[in-house]
Image (tube, rainbow, N blue to C red; front, side, top):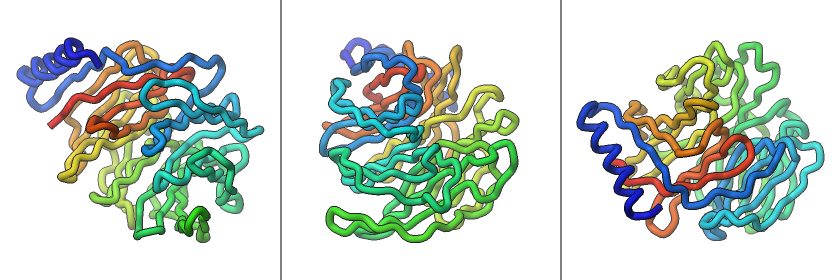
Length: 316
């Protein structure tokens, strides 16, 4: 982001905050990069590998995974996944890349070089979409996946979990269990915050559009609806900005062709405090955040076809 445009964005924040101290409007208008568009891609979700400084993007309609340089957006590699419909993606220990493949009904596992290692969940998953994780102890992680089968019906088994154990360059996975019993319909994005024991889940069923907060361990409902979403606009990508003092904020996407918004919620209280817009970015599905070189960056899907990256301003 250029210095002048960065200052303009900050002035926008300050002016609006003076008029309405409880709610900010943030406009980011100077992207760090924009990737080359891919027609009929169905770009969906984004993962980040810190040591390699790359993002991994799922292209569900093309049955591909694309790897881009996280600083300049240059395409480094593409991986074909036949008839897979790859959707959600997350990275564990900067070592493993986990991708939910809806049509294969499992989670595919790759190493950081995007070499295929194996799968899990094939006996339990019916229509997997979102995926997240948290660390239980050294070498042991909990993986959580949303299962959006028969999404027009209310279900209480939408979130399945596995213990994911790392042994050198290999992994082992436990049998699955269901997290809690919240009633959900059409679920996709999911994101875990271990420190505050919070799990955010996006409910995309039109009549129930919302982001729900659950207890990460028990699955009990912390907050049924974080609020601020318009009915008719899908809740989509979820990401988190973390500070060293355990403060920070959530970013939750409200997908729209005409009013594409990103709602910001305090990490601990879950209170809404700002709405963010990205210039020339609309109909956003997946997002991710990354911390590099002392700065936070936001990566967002634009119109299912490209990735746009922005440096995030400091927000207190």
